[in-house]
Amino acid sequence: MRISNSFSEGEIQVMDFILTTLLRGGTPNMAVRSKDFASLCRKVQSMKSRAADVKTGAPVKRGEPAQSSVGVIGAADDSVDESADDFRDVG
Image (cartoon, rainbow, N blue to C red; front, side, top):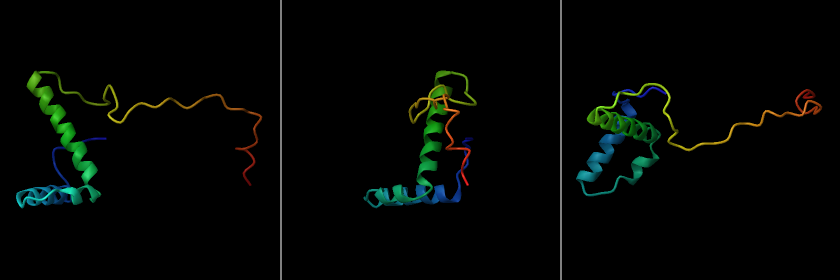
């Protein structure tokens, strides 16, 4: 997944909604329901990470992160019973 510094039209609408709501003294709870909210959050987190790297002088990372931000799951089990007809007899 490539994260750019530009924002889509939907992401801009989400940011505009949040900012105008906060300026009026409300809470931006409705913005979470927008389909572009998750994409906007990922971009903001990526930009924060890049800014911190630049600030510390660390090299800018490209490619896969060292650790997933959503957690780790185990790999699929490679041991498949070849005698099972489940996959061959489908029709």
